[in-house]
Image 1 (cartoon, rainbow, N blue to C red):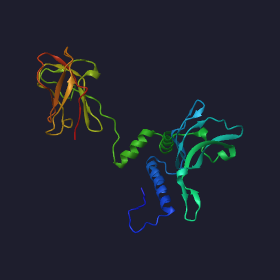
Image 2: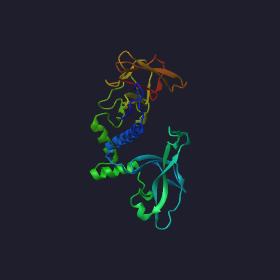
Image 3: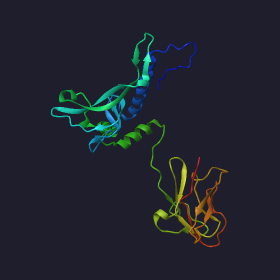
Image 4: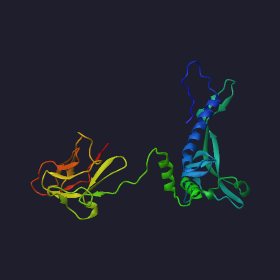
Length: 287
């Protein structure tokens, strides 16, 4: 984004053009972001809110002819015969911006611009953003996408725009990998699922932030390896992790669960009797 560099000695000759340059830089940055989705001109659309609820228009933000404006909301008012409600700009002065110029003139320099709804004749409304045609940013993007390629929906458009740049990847979190299933790690040393329901079977997966999550309820009675996580799902070398996990053994006690850098998951010590461990609290980051 363009900016004015004020880090200079010798008496910076500040002019109004400097402030105008900064304001235009912000507007240009907004268009730069929107251009990723196909919005390359000053279009009008609702960014958030501004919807009708009961007898009032709710607050929100709107892009009006390329300018982002806050809307404080207002009561519903019918435009009358031959008129239409349109979006307009209400400009007022902020008293703290009153400046005394060198020539003695007192000028209000802080202009507060907000959106409002006004009624105009139908002839004037032709060139205005009509309230009756309110479109959210999401709706506008869908229209742009449809014009380009009807087969693409908004989600694919965003994924294509972001993914094509290679800056980051938006993807769904991988499905749960169930322990004991074909191609997945197997239980060891007599450990097993305590429930047959899919959501309670032992499993693991990694999210988009690199966090490994465990889930399920398992049963066993020894401190040997329960199962081994595959490469890519293990704590960083020399950085074993341990967790306090609840066990339904009649005493509602907590036990310690270890995950080492080889992916081995073990229970701390041996309870002597069969216990049911809950894996759901366990999650850790892998590099």
